[in-house]
Length: 314
Image (cartoon, rainbow, N blue to C red; front, side):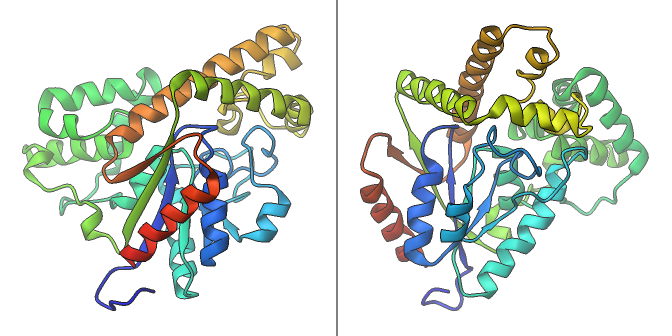
């Protein structure tokens, strides 16, 4: 794609907090440019999690091809590394067809995994070291592992988000094997990857975004979210499964089990979704190169702006 064969291909990405309208914007751009969407959502990868994840409708999937939907059973765990491997293949396939890939979603770690290689440096891996740090993360949380890195390699610790557990563990692994801080090596950036990224986001005033979130939760409940969660549990999906930790699922399980009232469960869901949106904005503000559009502007107008930027970059 593009006019300059020496340029790396462009991959567009539409990111930001839940309920911001990024999916609608990406649909407009994808349809007008003949693109295909690669979903970048940690819960949409699961089969059967449709309403609570705001999974694209069958009509939308008919309008624009979608990848990275329904790729794993809700009974199975799914890692960032697994996502990156499959999504990279999907992006390459879309580009091979001469189409524009559009990443769409709010899972910041997925975007980072695609922009930066997941493994780096020349020090070989050590499964025993990795397993030990992984156990610490499981016992005490990712923040405890990050705190250990802060002690031995503060430069790398400040460069890596505490939730970016794979890279945090890799930095500790390198330190243990070499006695040198990982910051002595360069962490590869996007420039070393196979693609260039055109990043877009929609931002809203906080109170307006929270109103949009509350309305979206109400629509999901009206569409049958409680029954969706009940069906998943009845099919043998454990309440402790990774898939059931997603917003809209974890909060409704106590209600379905008779351990919480309906209004209490809904209030908890709305509050946690608002808190999640706040964390997403904090994450994406750190991400370099995002062009922010203001919420409330006509979606067609925003799509025209995005298209112009993408075409200029190609």
